[in-house]
Image 1: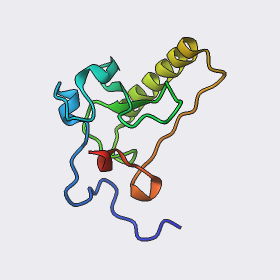
Image 2: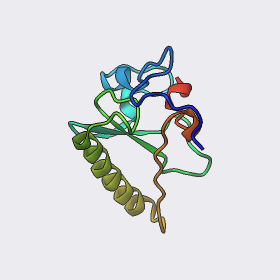
Image 3: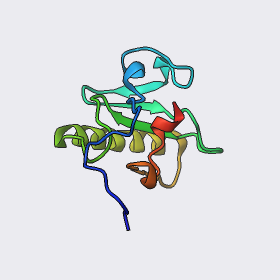
Length: 119
């Protein structure tokens, strides 16, 4: 069960989109602009700040617009993220010769969305 649900689009108190400064070209001590490995008009791929051990291909793909989570992102921006996820997955497979890749999408604290907590 989901328990008590907030209205879609509600932001937790003190919420700040964790990628605004990075996408504007400013580092934050965790990510730096050079961590962005691919950027389109509506999505960006960056080396994850907290790499998983022994996982050379840990990349975050985020929308370039300010959307808190899956519930708030417009269809076109979500499509742009999906297109970039596909591009990155193919590049990782070809670069590292891995036999497969995994993708994940998390929303809200109970869904293990943790980017805001990393900042």
